[in-house]
Image (cartoon, rainbow, N blue to C red; front, side):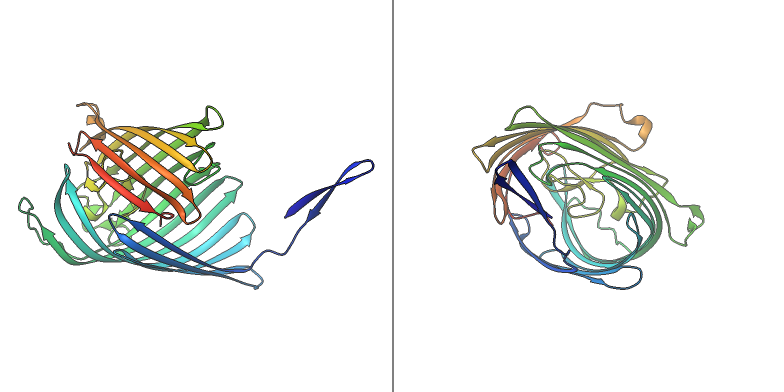
Length: 347
């Protein structure tokens, strides 16, 4: 939908124009960073003109991490969806411990995701679904301090309830709006239990909001956490921190200023972050953030010790190819600085 204003002798005339919505689209993306080097992603979406609208979508990613995804989405009514997805992931990830690389793990993950109900009303959505995940481990290279234990292939059936709210005006250089995500998941290996024991649960939540102090300066406080409920949580689903985004390398990854690589933490974690973003001229940004987080084996022990602190500062240029810039950071957990350079949108 577009509009134009035309002057006439009485003032102005407002003219509104509308065109048909595209039923199909092809999207291509290229990204560079100092950790994965180069990554490519392609996406194809097509809407079938059936009685109940059916959208087919295919996505592929090439790089150090490989991904292929196929989605089929039914839209019985405008605000509700039912979908079935298959995702293949090949991950080659370095895991760190207090800033030192502990081991490397290479594995394939197959995921079948059935979304039984997905309700969207304006900025709010509610999802209810079930998943099957199979993890096939290819290589695990332990460091000198590693435990050298073998990791067996494993599969899990899980049930998920997720709530989302998003009114942010931009995905990266946000200047106003809020975002809230919360969810509960229950994991089993036989649809009901995990062997002879009950399954284990996962609770996660995140809230952040952005305030514009003036036309160039914005401040964004955020609080987030993830709690695992149960015993003998498998390594592949344990809490992890590192980087600047949620779910970048693995689904349960949580950001932490000053920690650039993935690190495992205890079963209960709660963190808070404050970020400031200053725009210089039209497309240049300086971003600084500080994070404090508590983690413990049990939720009730979260306050038994002081928080881990992390700091980082970034410069970015908002180019036509996506954000181009560099980040430097330091944390008490790693006790060493890092520098990270990237170009392109995150995927």
